[in-house]
Length: 190
Ligand SMILES: Cc1cc2nc3c(=O)[nH]c(=O)nc-3n(C[C@H](O)[C@H](O)[C@H](O)COP(=O)(O)O)c2cc1C
Image (cartoon, rainbow, N blue to C red; front, side, top):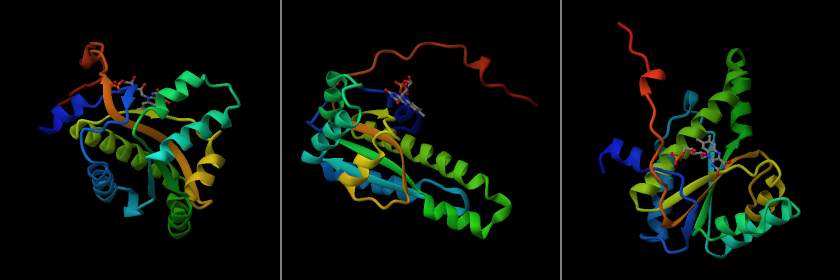
C-alpha cells in the first residue's frame, strides 16, 4: 500500500472479532518492527509494548470491567473483549529519568518527548495493523486500570501505561471521515 493510502485507511473500528485476516505472528512482527523504527528523543528508547492476545485478551478486559466496579457498561467492555488482542503502550519512566539526570537542561522535556514518541508509535502500529487488514481502536482506561494491568502483564513498576489499542478482524468498518476545509488548519507561507 502507498504510504498515504495506508494513512487514509487507518480508522477507528469498534466492531471487531477474533478472526484475524493474518497470523498473529504477522501482527507481532509488525509491532516489533514499528517499535524498532519509530524515533525517540536522544534515541532514548523509552517505549515499551505488551501484546495481549488469546485467552489473556479476555482476562484483560474482564479485569478492566472489574476495575471500574460496574461504572463502565458491560456491553462496552465486551466490545473490546471481542477483539483478537490489545496492544498496551507504556513509557519506561526509569529510562526517561536516566536521560533527565544525564541532561538536566532538558529535564522537563524528556517526559513530553516520551509521550510524543509513544504517540508516533501508536500511529505507526495503528496504520500497520490496517495495512495487514486488521482493524483497531484506541482506548485510555489508565490510570484506573494501572494496577490490574501490572498484575496481569508483570511489567515493572517503572512502566507507565499510556494507551490500550484493541485490534481484531473488521466486522463493520468506520464511516466516511467528515469533510473539512483543510486550509483552515494548514497554512503555507513564502
Ligand atoms: C490521542 C488519541 C486519543 C484517543 N482516545 C480515544 C479513547 O480513549 N477512546 C476512543 O474510543 N477513541 C479514542 N481516540 C480515537 C479518536 O476519537 C478518533 O481517532 C477520531 O475520532 C478520528 O476518527 P478515526 O480514527 O476514524 O480517523 C483517540 C485518538 C487519539 C489520536
